[in-house]
Each structure stands twice: as C-alpha cells, then as structure tokens.
Image (cartoon, rainbow, N blue to C red):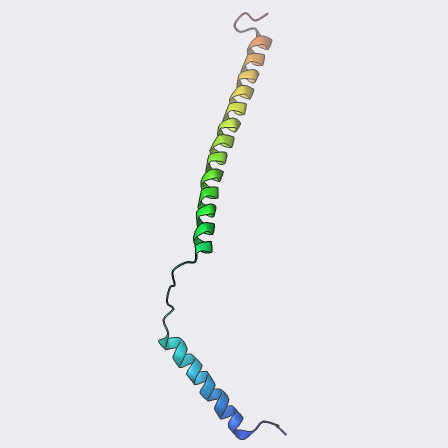
Length: 87
C-alpha cells in the first residue's frame, strides 16, 4: 500500500548519516564580527552606561524626596507637640 520506493528509505538513511557525520566533524568557526555588529555593540554598551547614570540620578532624587518628607513630618510633629517651644 505504500507508494515509497524500496531504495528511498536507504537514501534517506544515508543522507541522515552524512548530515550527522558532517555535524560532528565541523567545528563552528567564530568569524570576526562585522562592522555593523561592532558599531551596534558599542552603542548598546554606551546606552547601558547612560542608563546606569540615569538610575543613579533617579536614586539620588528619590532619597532627597524621602529626606524632605521625613524632615517635614518631624517638623510637623515638633510644632504640634510643642516640644521645642514651637508657636
């Protein structure tokens, strides 16, 4: 009932054997990167550095805002309780 020729299986098996043999024998040669890859990598690395600078600046702003809020809360508490003779 199969429409395959008897030698088709053998040809397929031989092709698979050759493929696996070549795959085992070949070692991937690492080619030098193209100019586009090098430029892209440099831009990505510079963007990473800029993002780190932005993150540091935002962290500093966040700390400043928190310190201002803590100072305001302390000031309000001192004035409400009259600890230091607040008016």
